[in-house]
Length: 102
Image 1 (spheres, rainbow, N blue to C red):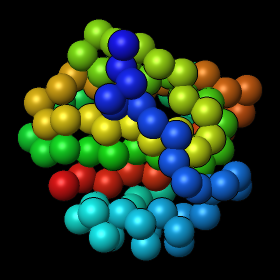
Image 2: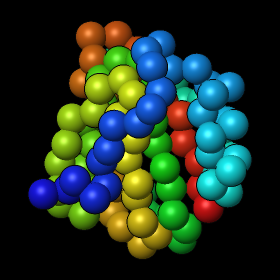
Image 3: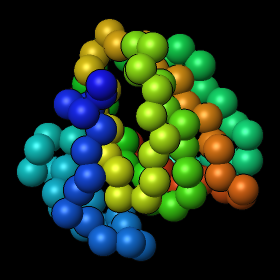
Image 4: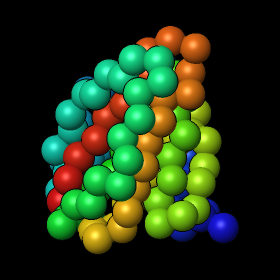
């Protein structure tokens, strides 16, 4: 189970980017908005640092080191450095997500 990677947050929907910026800056993460069109896939992009992602709007299929979850708004996922993540927009339209590297 991936419960140590995927967690609900204290943010309410709609997720406010300014609230996430404030929260993450205290944790050492920047906050960048990413918008994916329907069906967009990102496969096996390995980072040399830790990453956090929070879904702002839509639905994402996220796989980290062969463990898959479906993210809904307000879900936050921690991707440890050297993990192998893949992301797919599984929403009926665009998905908006915020990410930061540390």
